Image (cartoon, rainbow, N blue to C red; front, side, top):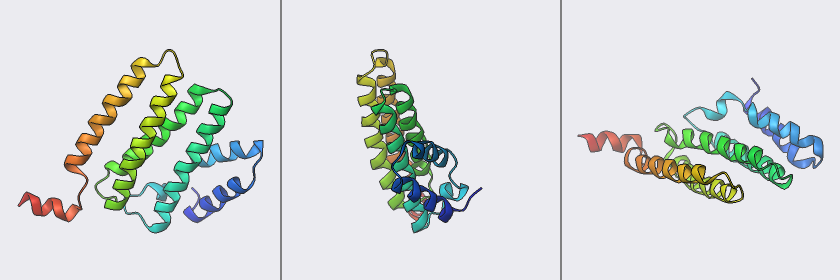
Amino acid sequence: MMELITWLEQMQKCYQQRNIHTISDLVSLIHSPPESLWRPQHSHAQVKAIEIWLDGCMKIFQYFQDLDHEKLAYQYIELAYARIQSVTANPHSSLELRYWGANKLDRLTILMLECCQTQSDCQQASDQVIELHVAFMSQLGEINMHQPDQSKNSER
């Protein structure tokens, strides 16, 4: 597994090279980030890398959407949502990262709903996206959007 710095350098190369071959490199990097990217205790470099990872997902989403591959584009929004959701739900993630993640989840939900509007067979998925997002955010607000030390104090 590659190191975080190496992964970031390769992502930067993908961004600088704007050709058709770059998308396959970007897809590969998005699907195989270093494990350290998803560790609960996030350094500044990790937080920046998560932002870059999400941006990479958005670039792939846009690429496939521009080619009218709506279902493939949608899968990258789902992938991004799942990963950001796991970071946001982790009580060991920094409070700042959890708030950032919650904000990004709102935006990803809107993107998923916009994708569903362009597909005729997606009404049920659209309803499910809304229901699941509301359920997740409700639970998140109740149990996770405070510092770990605060939860101990509130239990006393």
